[in-house]
Structures are given as C-alpha cells and as structure tokens.
Image (spheres, rainbow, N blue to C red):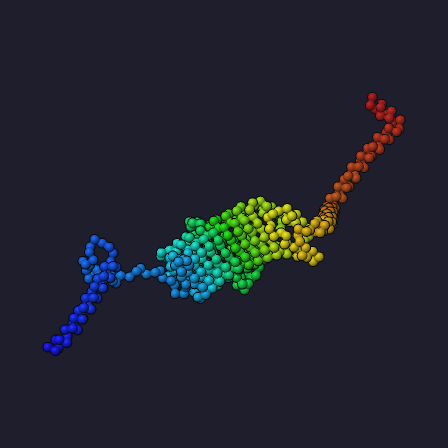
Length: 426
C-alpha cells in the first residue's frame, strides 16, 4: 500500500531517534547516580525523576541593598539610605560596613538573628546620623572585636550600650578596639546650653566606658575631635587593659582631673591639637611611672612662664615624649615659636614671679595684721564700761596699797612713834 510504504521509513526513523535518546538518558543517569551495590539498570522511574530534579543547596542570601562577598566574609551596605539594620544578613559575615545611611536609633538587640551572627568581628557604623544607642544594642554579637561609631551626633549613648541591658549579669564585652571620633552633637542639639551640654556629654561618654567593667579588655580607644574641655575624673578608671588612647583635636585645657595611674599597659597617648598650656607635676609623675608609654604633645599653645619650668626640666630628661623637639611656645608674644627644650630659667622670668609673690605675701600679711588690730579695737570699744570699772578698781587697790606703805614709812621715820610702838608691844 502506498500509504503504508510511505509511513514505514518515517516510523523506523522515529523509533531509531527514541532509542538513541533512551540510551543517552540511561548513560546520563548512570554517570550522575551515586555509586551503590544496586545496579543502575534497576533504577526506578521515580528515582530517576528525583535525581533529575535535585538542586544544589542555595547560597546564603544577600540583602538587596548590600554587596556581599562570601569568600572575603564581608557585607557592605554603604550609602543606601537604610533606616535600620538589614534583617537578612548572612550568618557568615565577619566584616560588616553600614556607613553613610539614615539610621538614627540603634535599638536593643539590633543584631539579634537566628542563626546568630557569631562570626561578626568588625562593625563599622560611622556617618549614620545616629542620635541614640540603646542598652544592649550589641548584646548578641559574641565575637565583636572592632566597633566604629564615629561621625554620629550621639545625644543619648546609654550607659549600658557596651555592657548589655543588665551589666550585673552580662559577660564582659569582647571589644578590643572602640572608635568614637567626632560623636559630639552640634551645639544647638546639646542639652542645657553649650558649656553645660558639653559637661553632660562628657559625663555620658564616661558612664558608657565605665559601667559594669564591660570594657576591661579594651586595647584601643579613640575619642578624637569631640570638643572635650576636661577629662572626667573616672573616664579611664575601668579600662585597665588599654594600650592606645587617642584624644587629639579636642579642646583640653588641663589634665588635672584625669588619672593615668591604673593604665599600666598604656603604650601611646595622643594629645596633639588641644589647648594645653602647662602640665603639672602630678601628671608628669604618673607618666614617668608607666614603663611603656609614649606621649605625643605637638600643636598645643604652651605658655612659657615660670609655671612651665618644671615641665621644661622634665622634658629635657625624659624619653616619654618622642615629639618634644617640636614643642614651641605660643605665649607670651616675645617667646612665640621658641622651642621648649631651648628655654632656661632666666628665659621663663622666674625671678620676677618670685618677687611679685613676695610682694603679694607682704600685702596679705599687712591686711591680716590690720584686720586683727581692728578686731581688737572693736572688742575694747564694746567692753568700755567694764574696762572703765576694772581700771577704777585697780586704781583704788593701788591707792590703798600706797597709803599702807606711806603709813609705815611715817612710823619708821619718827623715833617717838617707834618707841611708842615698842612700849606698846611690851
């Protein structure tokens, strides 16, 4: 039949193609199937379909606004206008950059995840417009070693920000490096005006650094460009492991209230670009007692008068200040740009200061004596009646006494009265 003859070759070609496809599929299945004691020819259709549809495990997801590198274990969410920490951070992250966003508050448990971000070591939150860091904000980061909060106008840094929500039961913070450069809020955002606001800001930072001994393992602390006028007395009290302290570019006028005695591991102290005019002997003695410390003092307005004499003598003998050759006078005008190491006692006008102090002492002594004299005269005036009566009594007693002497003298002078007195005795 013509019809059957025409379909015969076509049907044969179709069967041949199907056979070839079957052989190819069987070869692919046998090559992709895991080795086992069961022969590949016994593979069921269901197992074949399952093996063909199996997919490799999906890679860890990356937040849509971030860039992730699993090989470098780094996540960057930079300049993305984020309002909060992304919720779907991959658990492999070790270095996390969340800079240049719009986060204003870092709440408690901001990094709490399941599974936890146990490998996160470095966290950069700089330039985020953060105004408030709540207690326990970093509580769920057990491996966090480096934290950067710089360039955030912090008006409320909780005292428990680094210690956890309950410092009495929480473990010490694992932080080794803490960067808090330029976290001072603008003047119009400070509480109670400019000066009072700065005092409150300094106290707030000190409370966060000392609460609960949380930062006892901290090695590196940066507090540059924060307009500090004075260091709070207990700012460094709970940082016994500190090795590097950066206080440059503040407005420090004195270190009187700061104590460095307990910082026995301190290696570098940066005080450049402040407003220091003189360092007192107590501070110099503390520095000299620290074995490994190096202090950097360049670009401070030193006042070269007699009060600087002890510091100049100390600088000439110590090796604690590596940049001491660059220290120069700022005041008085005649001493401007003179090197501190080139000064002598005659240059510092200590003699004139001494004579002025003596003159001041003499004036003070004269004022005290005049005051004592005035008080004495006032007492005499108030007791003038009693003094007058007392003087009259003394006068009467003296008169009676003199009259007795006069009577005896008259008796002794007249022999008749003497004999009369003798006869009367007989």
